[in-house]
Amino acid sequence: MKKNTDEEIYRQIVESSGDAIIIQQNEKIMYINPAGVNFLRAASSEEVIGTPVFDIIPEKYRKLVEKHIQSALEENIPTGMIEKKLKRFDRTLVEVETNCTPVIYDGEKAILSVVRDITHRKETERTLEKVSKDITALSAPVLPILEGVAVMPLVGSINDERAEYILEHVPLKVHEQNVHTLISDFSGIYKLDATVIDCLFRTSGVLGLLGVRSIVTGVRPDVARSVVELGMDLSLIKIFGTVQQALHELFGVKG
Image 1 (cartoon, rainbow, N blue to C red):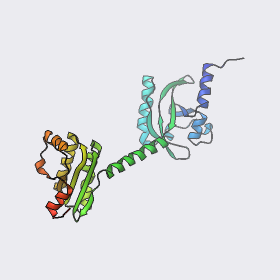
Image 2 (spheres, rainbow, N blue to C red):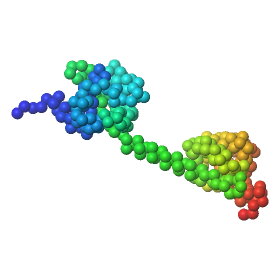
Image 3 (cartoon, rainbow, N blue to C red):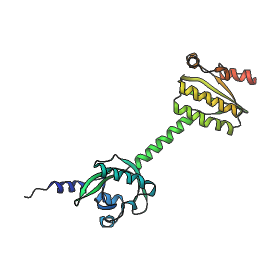
């Protein structure tokens, strides 16, 4: 009984792989396994073999792919995984990650690529990113309480991302709602660092340029101490103990 050679065993592994495997040589596809044929939505391997490799790579990714191919061939080591899109034979685009591994095919240098569909992963990442943005938006609401007066209740901790959101979006919300006085209530905040405090003070500065008065309420003693220790000038912002106190003293509203 004849034993399989290493080459035959390797071919069997490649043929049975669930990942799309493509070998390209001189910028043409020279081999593709059955999973690759299905992945590219081709009728057969014969339809794929001989196809210029850049026929399935959108123009925006061409330079990136050329760079990885050149690097693999010159340094004779595999490249890391890169994310890009491929153009299938039915003209649809699919998000993938691929690598470039230098191999010898029919006695000449070639590139073997393992192609993995990452569509679901990218969709999940985009969904999580959107959820994160939505949560951040909900964590800095601008709520109208009187004509031209709104309160922004802040709860929990404020990290860099949330602070930057406040700096970028709160002035827009205030402008859209024709707010002339914004009360930022810090009674639910338990931790601020220098970066975040600086961002919040810059937000007050932007609001001032828009003609919006910034009021701060509910600053806890430990938070106030942190602000003072960081050398921030609180004289630029009107501070009250509570929202109710601010409304009463500024607008005569009784709590």
